Image (cartoon, rainbow, N blue to C red; front, side):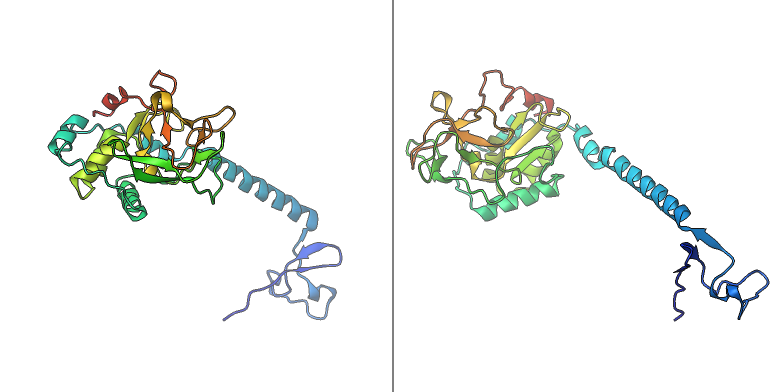
Length: 283
């Protein structure tokens, strides 16, 4: 294999083409002063200028790529295809009242649900939602059956101080930009009681997307079991905190106490739950 030709630098700091590049007449000028270099040279300053220009072009191109909208994300949020059945129709067709099986799903089940969401257009961990939870954060909670006949709930595994984080992550958050994709997600679940559960777990939320788009949102872990506390709410947002996902103790919570959030914290159906939003998705 032919070895590549290397460039050399002369004593005058000029970049010189190697001697193998002879003149047009084929004269190698052996034994002459020019035998060590060709007739063509590029000054160091000219080469540096060219390098700067190339660097500037490259940086500019990278900036353009950074500010250009993500076409895949834009397409995702512009897809407003409605569901072909309302939520009540789907609920009734699956006989959800008769299939009310309060299952405490294991981690593997939630992973299966998340995989099904990705299969039907899920975007993965959203970069437009942030959480202050550290990467190794473990919620001080666990799922249990309630003692009051209300099914499943979330309970403190230890004493929790006021202002302490109770929940915070984005990796288990599923969201749908249209009713059709949510319907296909439900159809992809293997059992009626799984589909019925997710019709209860999910909620429509306005101002969710990166540009204020509405979405159907669901938490793909046992915190979906968290009940609305009303006046007994002990979990929510505290002042100065990032609460797009994160939840904090609003007061001291004792070990074994049930965790309650507020589905409609300010009474306007805008902060968390927007029941009227189902119609926007054809549900």
